Length: 130
Image (cartoon, rainbow, N blue to C red; front, side, top):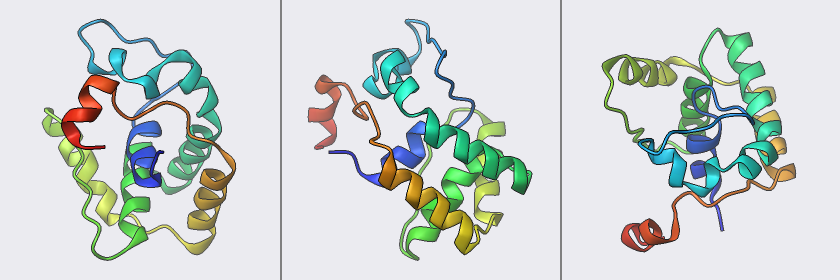
C-alpha cells in the first residue's frame, strides 16, 4: 500500500508530466511510480498541485512540502537533493501556508485518485523495510 505522504513527496514534485522519460543513469528510470502508466494515472493530482502552486507563486515541490508540514506538527519532511538550488527551493516550502480550502482540495484528490506505482522497485523495497 502507498501512504499519502510518499505520494505527496514523489508524485507531484518538480515538473512531472505524463510524457516524462528518464535516462538509464536516472534513478527514476527504475522506480515504478515513474513508469509511463503511473505517470499518466497520477496526472490528476499533478495538475491540482500545479494549480495551487501557480496561485501561491510557488513550485509544486514547495506545495508538496507545505502539505506534508500541515498534516501534523511532528512531521519533518526530509527531501533528498544533491543540488543547492533545490535545497533552497525545498526550504521555501516551510514558508507556505495552505488554507483549509487548499488542504481539502488536496485531500479530496488523494481520496479520489488511486496513486499508481510503488515508491521503490522490489529490490530496494526490501532494503528500506517497506
